[in-house]
Picture 1 (cartoon, helix red, strand yellow):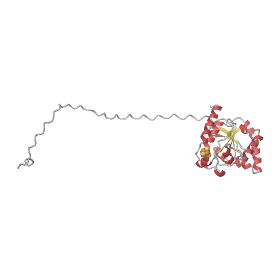
Picture 2 (cartoon, rainbow, N blue to C red):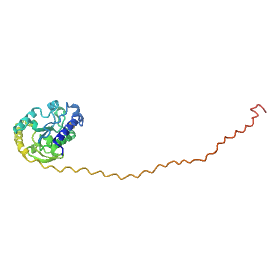
Picture 3 (cartoon, protein in one colour):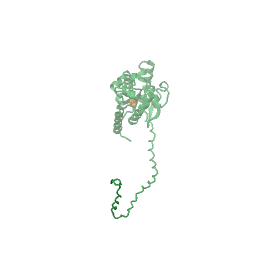
Length: 253
Ligand code: SF4
């Protein structure tokens, strides 16, 4: 079991990795910076939103615009503040023009979110809106049907209480949603007071690799046998017999 300091150091290592991530070429090209997430690295409560917007992209911190102010208010209403919680998103880079995250981008970035969950070890995760709710529940059911209903799920290798909430950006302009969000938020302290969910048994260590059958030793290369031939005493070849004079060459007939 890693200590708090070890988990924190590992989270910093994940941040360094994400900071230069180019898994989504378009987002890597258009972002100002990666918005990794911010808050308490040992928080009991974690929020997961959708993706950074223009202000988050500029400042590198999640939820700093109008929706962020509302989130701060809602936290304050239940006696919490940002340093008590960790806030992250489904995507760590801003989609251009604030378009919806693409399925491939969500898949690319989910590895960072899973590692954040495993290292921060929250007891309760509030998904904010549809994207994070669908991702963490691995189910297409929308937020309208699920908000305010906690359930225990295993995320990565951690059992947590998942508590879907409307996204504060959606509640900014719709009074009824804001009232619902406030009412759902008000149940958070009671959720946090529950015993932490029982953790699943640690994953079995990988089976030891079955050794490959030993390969037959290669046939030895045939060694060329050098045969010493009996040495013959050197005898110079007899001088060639003088050619019989060619009469013609001599000019004789
Ligand atoms: S969105 Fe996530 S996976 Fe995609 S480039 Fe940014 S950090 Fe990498």
